[in-house]
Length: 194
Image 1: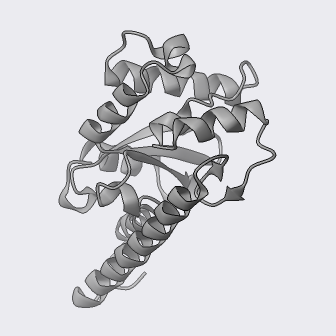
Image 2 (image 1 turned 90 degrees about the vertical axis):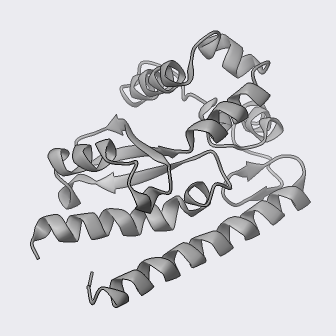
Image 3 (image 1 turned 180 degrees about the vertical axis):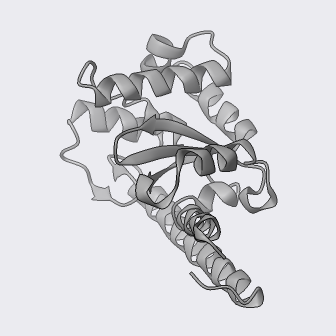
């Protein structure tokens, strides 16, 4: 078993760990950082193109940002993401940058805005929080308070509805543990090692 095998195992581990709520259809999307020294461009692109495979449970995987050291991957459930963005269509953030775009165009626009931010040519695209399924009041609170004065911090900074956020955080933690348990059990069943 060569490097390609180990690289795929690494990617599956990272995805299991970081996107468990997405893979379980409990969150519209998630972000994952994958370090380039673990995967070649060709391997990652092939995995993204075959992202309809069973492991991803219908999720799609796209490269949102590429730097010299890492890739920022966007893992999402297409229908759930469309519903989430439709729910927030009247938000100032989405109206300003994404009016009348279909989902693929919205993701493309988000990619361009994130790349411009990375290059120092634009402000951070805070609307990414809406793509990730964060409550709109928390995204707006983050912008208004410049990331400060939050009530609690977990998977995101919470500015309102602490009980609801704590419940989500607990659910996401449980899903992550369950996904990692399945990952390790599958490795063991197949007599594989990391």
